[in-house]
Every structure is written in C-alpha cells, then in structure tokens.
Image (cartoon, rainbow, N blue to C red; front, side, top):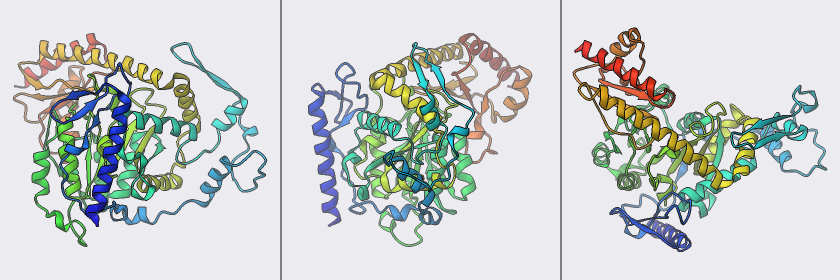
Length: 489
C-alpha cells in the first residue's frame, strides 16, 4: 500500500512538471541529469524544471510523511494562542464587526501619523494616516496576507515545488514570515532537534547555525564537503552506520535532520551541483530525513541558469527552506521566510505566537508595497543589479588574491554569496594569526575555527568578505595579509 501511495505521488509530480514544460515552449537540455531549464528570454522562471521519470526511485520508507515523528516534545505540545487567533479572526472580519475582545492599544494614541519613503528609482512608498495606524499595530503571526501571497507566488514561479498542489496533511507547501531567516532557523531547530539527536551538517558551516544548534544538546555529525558542497558519497558513508530499516524503531539513533547551505555557503562559498542535490535527496528518502535548505544566498548566484533547489525536487514534502531579504533588500528590515510542509510551518507559527508574536508590521508593509510596485519582473531586475555588484566585488577580490596571496594561500572562486574561503599554506591554526597579529597590521578576517563544530581544533582557513570594502581596500588588505603570513612562516 505504501508503495502504491509513493507511485501515485511520483505520478502527480511528473504531471506537474510536464504541464509546466508545455507552458515554457522552449526547454533546453542541461547536463546529464535530464533536467529542463527555461531560458531567461522565454521566462523569468529561473529555476530548472525536471523530468522526474529518470529520477532513481529509491526505497519508499512510508506512503505519506509522518511529520509527528520529527517533532520535539516541546513543539508537539504547542497549542494555538486564543488571543492570537482572535486577533487574526478580527483582521479577516468586515468593518461592521464590533470587537471587545482584543487587547491592542488604540492607534490614536500613537505619536506617528504618516510618512513617505523614497526609493532609489524615484518611486515613493506612502504611509498615510490609515496605513500608518495599521503599520504600527499587531498583525498575523504568519505574516501580513499581501506579503505572504506575493512571496508564495514567487516561490512557485522560481521553484515549481511538486508539493504546491498536495493536500495539507500530505505536506502541501506553505509559508510564514520570520524576523530574518535566523529566527526561522532557530525555531525550526527547536521544532525538530532533541537532546542527544544526531544532526547531519556540512561543516564548516555558518556560525549562527552552530550557535543555535549546540545549546540544544544534539550531536553534530559532520558530512564531508568541498567547493561543490556536501559530498553524497560522504553522506552515504556516514549514514552507513545505520540500517534504513530501523528508521521507525523506538529509540533509533538514525539522524532525522540534515542541514545544508546549498548556494554560496557561509563561510566556504561552496555551491552544490544539481547532481549532488538529487543524490542527497535520494539518500534522505531512503533514511526518511528532513532536509533544512538554508538558502540566504540563492539570489546571489553569479551565473545563470540558477541552480535547482531541493524545494524544486521535493516530491515527498521533506524540505524545509529558509529564505532571506537581508542580502538583497536590507539586513535591518529583518524579514525572512520559512517554506515547507504545512504541518511543520504551522508548528513554527505556533512558536512565533508564543515568542515574537509577529515580524514588524511596518517593515512587512514597507516591503510589500515595494514588491507590489515593482512586480515580479521589477524585483528580478533589482536582483540582477545586486548580482552584478557582488560579481564585480568578487572579481576584484580574486584579482587581488592572485596578486598577493597565490604563494601563501589557496582558494576556489565562489559561484555565489559574499565570501572567499582561503587555506593558509604553512599555517596550522589561523586563530592567533588573525586575532592578534592581523590587528597589529590593521587587517581583519575571520579565523576558520569559528565555523567548525569544535572551534578549538586547529584550523588553517580564514574567511574574507567582499561585500563592504572597496576594491582598493581589498587590495591593500591582501597586501598586508601576505606580509603577515610570510612573517609567520
């Protein structure tokens, strides 16, 4: 029966992809994967579309996903806030409703009345008195409706997730707004990770992820990676410690969660290839893993067509994806998104209800106005400009690295993101070199150890960011770094 359910779901995904291929009119064959890309001049849907019939079927652990088995006791115990539910009910009610239920402050007492925000292209975002009252008031924990609607359309257009048309209980794609993707990540980890759990992670990784995971008392299991991201053979070897048949046995120690940054990884700049994603996803199916796809640099991929995402491959509903506007609109606005199966997104929203309550209504309305003014085409045009800026910055850093560091360091050119990850030749540990001696030379980078599971282990790597400094400053910094390394050898 489980096998039948699996085949039906795969057939649904095939039909979903074929319908979209017909709409595209002019697919191009790309690599050895039997995947179809829609050319940019035909459509701005930048994510590849796939012919799923050639995807390895693997083993169906179960028909439909059993999301309850992934939840921590804390997350499973969360219940909807009655007050929050009343607030959201009131937001959907007609103006004729007389509510004595809410504890919201009266907006007539707020000192702010109106404002206008100038956009670089000359547009003006207006907050009149009515809009300002709404902007300064409580709003829905999942996000304001107009922003969520816009983003759901974007996710579907970019990633074409097979789960978009599933039923809610079978993992239908849903979304919520978070206060930056970091809030989304921390709440997803709290939802899924128990003390003592084995969590798969491609180290080195984002220090904020380590800061969120390590206090949970889990065991971080490092999966080998290189310039193309997580290595499927390495993941398979790590997972070979367990028998997939034991997945649903009580007290099984098989990992249930895999975390990865697939594009422009922080700190490595690594970007996972489509082939590797397929292989990792297939292993996730065999071992019934949830994949946390942390993708803040998705919109900073320097080459097109952009890489397909795990979300675009997700025929099971096992992907939880986090996105961020921090790198492309503003880091201070603190707007991110969690996309994933509705049963899990609902749990994240319950946590939001009990903690931050919601992301700033003002910043959500500000971004929503901008996006609706631009439209999807205008948004993607803006992304192109951002990409061009960071590509120029990356190229300047690579040029200076070739000029000053090729004898004392080695690196790979990042295909996305903001970082260059360098291994210092002849240096066992970069910690003292950077934290003490580099400051004397008035140059600062991040020692690689802070991105490792055990930060006290010796690490010869450093991370250089090319986002803020001018090409001239980057060149001078690498000149100083070169002298510093040579002096330490």
